[in-house]
Length: 157
Image (cartoon, rainbow, N blue to C red; front, side, top):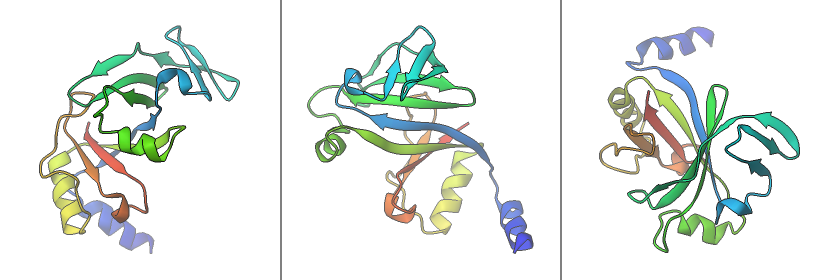
């Protein structure tokens, strides 16, 4: 078994760099009751103090959201809420009134090679070409039905 896993890893023309971020959606930033985060670099998750770098709220009109980036060591949380009535996250929030986890993002060192590999494995992509994501890098979303019910984003490292 281990040798077959090694063969798969060696045959990839790209590598997974690690978890880039988890994205959580809320109807507005003040409704996030389990996240008491402020830009003063100290916050609480479920009443446990954490050290984090927390950005100001950033409007991203091209994506239809406001976002707050929370850096936690070697990964990030992205807290999003809608920007306008036609925000692309409105449907998720209609089904999940309290908000919640939307997707995970995994960094790859070569997004084009990763896309070729995913297509070969019959993983459906949610756009024909990688758009530029909130971090200014190419991204691609993978269909949740092909990923164990989880919306997965890959992002160029």
